[in-house]
Length: 153
Image (tube, rainbow, N blue to C red):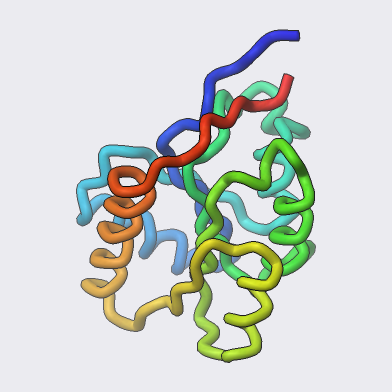
């Protein structure tokens, strides 16, 4: 059994909306993140990425240090992806921040119930998005101490 690298300080963004992905990428550049932003389009692709399956069987070298998860996506939405992620003993410790256009109290309550670490409503203003990305980077990679997580295989 070969041990692969531990949790890497990159952020995996799960969002099906092309414009949202572009805006998050630009916000990361504007925030001058010292870490990479990677993108997948839905919950199915998220799980393939995290489990090193399909197209990610040789491409992914480490697990992300943070997942930004949208809720409403085709194929597998954020709720189901969150349930499956938090049920897997090797993945459940990866912090998940729901980044959704929803402001619904029921969405917020349900995502926390399912194990999300935070819920952020996507801002309408680009400068606010840049600030959110900076705040997430500061908090999850500089302030808190995360567990040492090894990837599968």
